[in-house]
Amino acid sequence: MAVISHTFGGDLDLDASGGLAMVDGATESQQSIMRRLFTNPGAYLWHLDYGAGLPQAIGRSITAAEIQGVVSTQMLEEEGVDQSQPVTTTVNGNATGYYDCTISYTDAATGTVQPLSFTL
Figure 1 (cartoon, rainbow, N blue to C red):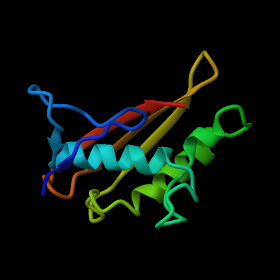
Figure 2 (spheres, one colour):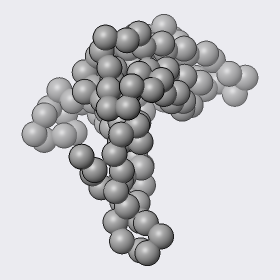
Figure 3 (cartoon, helix red, strand yellow):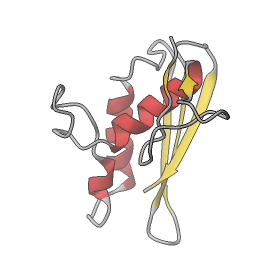
Figure 4 (tube, rainbow, N blue to C red):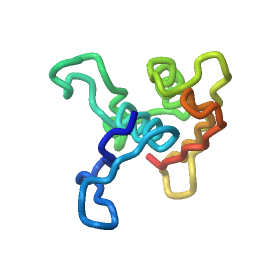
């Protein structure tokens, strides 16, 4: 089922004709995962325990292992992730003091292995 496309941190996405863009499958799952990881717990009024709140880690003393644990736990909650397949999460500190996070998971809708990465 297609849903309105929304890249986290931005506005709703538009298609080539200026209408609302729609996504499904792997792209929908990726957008949903990013929304879950970057939404602060308590910010979603209808589901107060939703979200990992990773942006709250910025400026705090946090280890790569803690970030990896949060991401791994949240991936278990995501319906777009095939839970019968392994999820790999790698978090490494970089030279600028940020953390690079790479996730590899199997998309439940398409059955394909999907990479997802971001920097905190």
